[in-house]
Each structure stands twice: as C-alpha cells, then as structure tokens.
Length: 475
Image: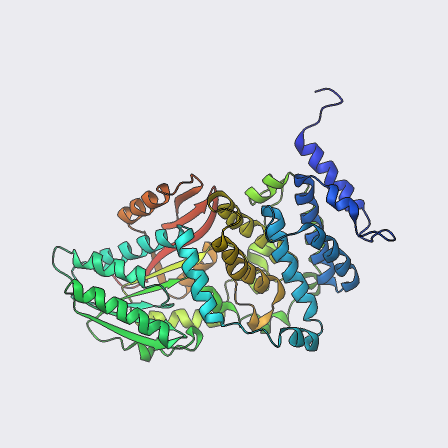
C-alpha cells in the first residue's frame, strides 16, 4: 500500500483520535460550524465519542461539561436522520433527563403538564412491535408448541399469562389444542394485567374463538400489578395441568431489588465510570459498522463486573426469587419464559450506556433494513418504545428503573435456584419458528439453540431468549 493510501479502519481510528483531543468548548461567536462538515462515518464516530464523554461527565457530576457535550450532540443527532443520528437523539434525551433529575423541582415542573396514558401507549407500541418484527411471533410459536406437547393427554389445562396483552398468542393455542387427536381439553386461561378493559377485550376474543371451535373454555381476569400478585386469585384447582407463560415481564420485578445493595457498593465500583470511559473510547476506535454489529469490537467485551460480578446485577434478587418460589408452589407442569437477551441491569451509568448502545443499535438496524425511514410506524416504535426504554435504562435508578433486561444465563441461575429444571424446547416448534423467520424479506433474522433454550437473533447477536422449565422433582 502506498503512502497515499490508507485503510478505512485507520482513517476512522485517526479521526476519532483527533475528535478525542478537540475541545468541547465552542469558539467565540461560533456554534460548532465544523460539525456540519463531517462525513457520515466521521459524524457517527464523533457522536459515539460525545455520548460516552457526556455520560462520564453526568456520572461524575460535571454538569457544565455535560451540557457542552449535549450542545454538540444536538447539532449532529436527529430522530429522522441516519441510524446513528436517530440512536444518538434518544440517548441524548435520556442523558438530559438524568441531568434534570439533579433538580427534582425543575424536573417535575417541566413534566407537570405532560399527559400520557402509559398503559394505552405501551399497548399501542407493543402491538406495533408485534406487527413489524418477527421476534414475538417466533416466541409465541415456541411457547404454544411447548404447551401443546406438555399437555398431551391432559383433560383440564390451566394457562397463566403473566402479562395478558396479546390475544393472538392464545387464539393460536386454542386452534392448536382443537386439533389434538384425542380432542381438546377443558381450557382455562388466567390473564394478569393492570387494565380491566384490556382483560375484558382479551376474554371476549378468546371466548368467541373457543365457541367457534367448540372448546370448553373459561377466562379468569386478574386485575393488578404483577409484583402485587396474590396467587390465590389465580384459583388453581386440584386436577388442573398448569402452564405459566411470561413474555418480556419478569425483568421488571428486579426494579426494587437494588436499593439495599446500592448503599453497600464499594467506593471503587461507585467510581468506576472513568474506567468504563477509557475502555469505551478504545472500543470506539473502530469503524461505526463494526462497533454496532458485534459485542466484541477491537478487543472490547463486557467486563466481568458488567456480566456477573457487580452486586447490583448478580442473580441474587429477593423479589424475583420469592415470586418464582410462589409460582413453583402452584406445581406447574410447564413454565415458559421469554426475555430480551441484554445486560441492561449494570450498576453504573457507563455499563448500562455501553451495553444498551450495542443492543438498541441492533434493533435500529433491524428497522433500517425493513422499514422506510419516513414510516410513521417506525417513528412511533423508535420514540414510544425504544426511546422510552433507553430513557428508563439511562435516566432512572431504584424502583423507577423497570427496564432491567438480563442475559439468559442469569435467568437460568435464578430458575435453578428456585427449584426448576430446564426442559428442551420442541424441535417441531423450532422448525415452525425458523420457517417464520425465513419468511421475512430479510436474511438478518436467525435462530439458534443454546443450553436447551432458543435464542432469536438479529445477524449473530442474540436479541430474545425463550426457555422452558418444570419443577425439579416432577416427572
């Protein structure tokens, strides 16, 4: 290679090194005009540098420097730009919200007139997520087939849905059970949700479908928060074969578990954000595409404290453990759990920022590959679902931080400790799910088996895990 030629990697790396040495302070009378001259890849790399720098300033309480970084990010980020600009827009909003919470009165005043029906908003975007992505459709196929096979020969089946928001899953199950050679069982579904009208609508739709297929059916609505569930309200009866389904729900129970642990954090862990920044800046010396494509970039991989050793992200979670023990007390024949396979429950802001940058970059990449940038559905998903999740992960702490997604290995440890053992998922269910993924006009959706569980992936990155369990002493 001649002296005039250079690789894109070296070019990108040198650009980022230049960026890292630049002052964040604007020149007199200037509003960072040179930012507008950056090419797309340079802009993406600089946005990553600014986000990491800003997050470090926020974590260390250097709010004036954080404000300067936010001003520069705002010049480059855009909710309707390219993928990196869109991601940066929502991470910027989250960091700004975290800063505002330093002044609780100001934060409350700014949000005092904001009227949002969170439950209705969540129902809308979850429906959009179901329609746009194949992840939940594939998960439902795996869950339903596991239930059908576990309930073979059972005459009375009781399914407990820990987040009864999507009737299509159970309509498909009713149809599957109606085709059993021995005939359909008597089916009872208990659905848990905070909104009575959501449960009423689900009960009506399921009852209609069961009546059409001549299946004996009952729907038991349980109104309330999952963390407040009294299992007696499920009315599990002797002789019922019980199956429990949790779809993207259990991680929220981790929300109240970190307050006692937070007070016991060692000083070194509390002050570890600067170490994460150094690691992140080394990581981001690669091209933007390489950064967003894989977990391991230029030698970076989640550190031991982000993976397992952090006190706040350890599998010891009293509320979840108690809840799982209560579920085991129902003696279910099968428990099937679907969770987002990400580590968003780190103890420090920098841990969560790094991990969520990777995982949400993959989700934004999915949208970029399948949906037009001008699509109103895409904008709703990005703002109302991904944007709100990013804000919760980055801006919130304590019981307020609900989006505590964790990796499959953490759930395996918890379920094992609660007295469950893994049940390999149905081969036929996996074939159905794989066929569904292949039917999308995109070759990025993949599926792989891991430890008897299934990972639904975008490219080579696991996005969602599905696992099945039974009580350890049951046959």
